[in-house]
Amino acid sequence: MMSKTHIAVGVASALAIAQTGSAESCVAAMIGGSIGGIIADCDITPSRAHKDALIGRIVVIAVSVVSLAIDYWYGAGVCDYLVGSLGVWLIVGIVLFAALTFVGGHTDHRSFTHSLVGMAAFCGSFYLICEPLLPYFVIGYASHLVLDITNKQGIQLFWPFKANASLGLCRAKGFANTVVLVLGIAVAALLLAYRLAPLFGVSIGVF
Image (cartoon, rainbow, N blue to C red; front, side, top):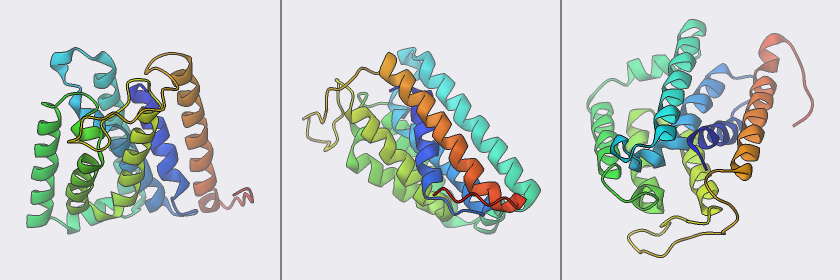
């Protein structure tokens, strides 16, 4: 699947486990789900001339910045946590995350970063950066692997073993990607509205 699809599904998956009526949880889901949904594709580097990956990274940055701005404005708590956790472990987490991203950028596409080992490593470093975001980052990352398993090229889920995990259902581009993208955006929008509704005095008894 393409980057925007991974982001949409990552955010939708994260919002599915967010707390209803909690602005902090929704902000965390938006940030963690979007980053987790696309970070596995850090193995697509600019040198590989992949415009889609660049667009995806810009979208994630935009989503994160807007979400943090909203969090700061309404005092939802994520910004307060990041400021309060400034210290050695936060620095270690950032360094590890940056190192893993660098390593991922020098590996074959859909190998290390698309494996359970890679996922565990990224999640460990992300835990050190911002623990409240971790559950949403994890589910966003998992959604990326699940989507790419449906691809005909597959992924090296059990890296360093070379065997590909693939259901062979679709290609990265095409009709299936468009359908999943639209569904991801729609579900994310509906879930966000549902989670935030109680904050505006609205009760929706659907989920």
